[in-house]
Amino acid sequence: MFETVFNEITWDIHGSAPFSPISCYSELVGPMFDNGYSSLLEDLSKTGLLDTTMVLATGEFGRTPRINPAGGRDHWPQCWTVVMAGGGIKGGQVVGSSDAIGAAPKDQPVMPANIAATIYKCLGVPIDTILKTPQGREVRVVDHGFEPINDLLI
Image (tube, rainbow, N blue to C red; front, side, top):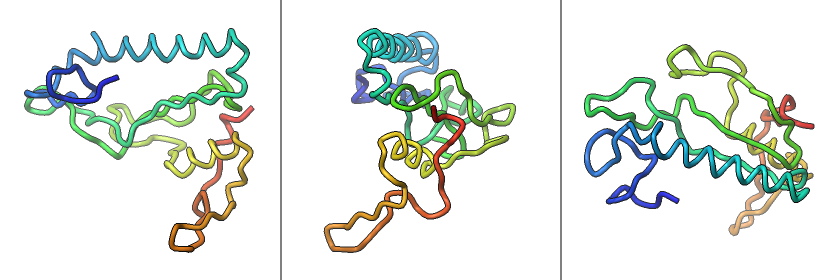
């Protein structure tokens, strides 16, 4: 949907050209995401496909909890949001929270490996499954010590 920062409205809102202004979060990209994501879930539900289709929305980082000097928000890997629905996920659940300014996890921190474990569990793939790299090295689909987010599972 937003493939470039040049001459396009994007999520990459740092506050200075060529990036979009921060107002685009609430005025454009946020509402576009809300409409698209909720419409997809409604369509999947109406057609009976939501139970077997997981819809995941995430990024590789969040955004700084404070506005930068250019009037935007920069990359922030310490704390971010993931939205999951369908395909074995129990709706209406919130797992964890951030501190008051969204700078760090406050409770129930979740790591990317927990998200991967949750997805594999919903797909019916045991999280201790071993795969081989092209070089023949064996690796687990999810590292030891990371479990699915059971609060999200049906």
